[in-house]
Image (cartoon, rainbow, N blue to C red; front, top):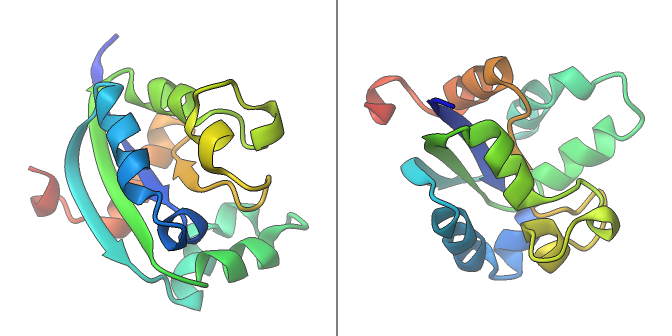
Length: 139
């Protein structure tokens, strides 16, 4: 295993519910170093661009709408095997299928309002990190 970087975002549902601090604490407890962190509110254009990979999927428009409903917290994270480890800590996309103790099992309301996003592959992580953070911010 090698040290790698990944991207994560605490979604509007969790920010609105005041769960961001607990979610961040779980991420840090799992051994992640936070390289960058910022609260922002996505514009419609930003949300469409960020989730463009899902454009042909039936949930695309509702996902874009959801992600623009309130602030999100975007994060650049680092640790050994970061991408796989974050996905393990987050739990399954559908909280009904998520393992006990995972972020989604504890905080997500539904498959669509699932409180957190994490990159799924190294190339995705690079793209998503670059979408929100400049190289200089992550040195």
